[in-house]
View 1 (tube, rainbow, N blue to C red):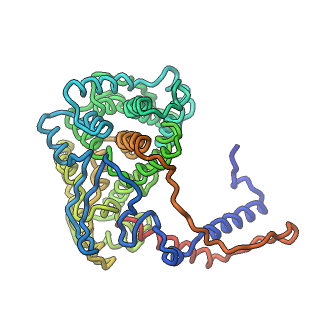
View 2: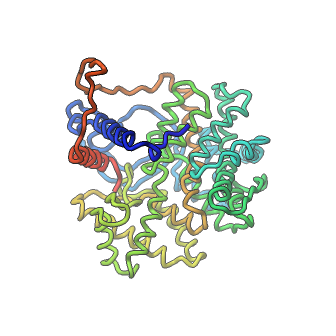
View 3: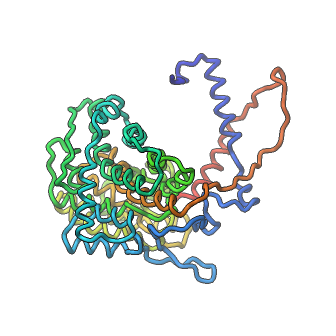
Length: 484
């Protein structure tokens, strides 16, 4: 079933490499063509703002104001159904309650629940945590994956076979499907992780049943830990992470994917699997893994973590592509939308400091804090930019997971466990208010050619210099779209 280039003959290898070069070369569109046709590349305007293509009442990201055509940076604000995230989180903290279930209710139904509504909603969620009979063995353990996001997407698609009403796109049925998926995502992720550790890590297999009397964060920690043990501080900060990542406006890539695929009138499982595929990418949900990897590299190469000069010099090396992964990016510093600050970062950082004290990791927390302070200045000087640079929530979320002893393989799946709430709300909104298949326009700029008889055709060869120039142009174009 698999095409394995390593088994090719010498002639086949040369041909395959030639065809790979041909595919790359004939897929490259010169950057100046986008300007020529006024193309909104990445659905972004020339000033970096998103192209307005839809309306939503679910989430809102406020990061700047436009005054006489000029973008004026502002402290970031995030709203769930009109309620500012800081207000929501602080309210839950004052009442000393885990709030992810409540955030899910708010996103799905557009209002905060009454005590009675919340009680029944939580009951439905708890009852939906257990996977169908045979699902764990047949769909997870018999086909494990090295990548948990891949396994999660396949598990979601498999749910179609267990749903007698899978194709019904009425609001009531989609709502039922979404509640079930939100509830069972932690179970799917936990079991996919345990299968991975057992089959690819040669470790003991632990399959802990979900507990109905625990909150989502407590239940997840219970399922991924061999001894089921966790404390309240750990569960509280994981609950906060779930709340902060549950929604981020309709324009983020995975929410937009949800709208696009939902607009075709397909089933819920196909939609959510597509959103998972979007979130899996390192430019979207996988960013916090890159932060952790970068920080481990800094720790290994900087002798004195409290020496700002030494840290600055190493950050410059990273920016100049002479250190870490050679991409020239300081991960977690900068955001595609936020300008002065990311409100999620502020809320998470407060708890991260307290957790670092409890875990004896204050020195590492101070390293993060120092890099948060100096990295924007280094970027501004090295890139010769004057704009404000916000610290992304990814900068601290990975560190929090590390302190919770959660392996890096689970970082993005936990993001999915949270964002499924926002995806579900966006799917229902598209069903109710969308109406039209989302179909942006693409202009074909390929020069016209004519049919050539088979015996007259040759494969064009491209020099290494040509391919190097194309790759450089692709990289430079991508860099304009990436955060700092």
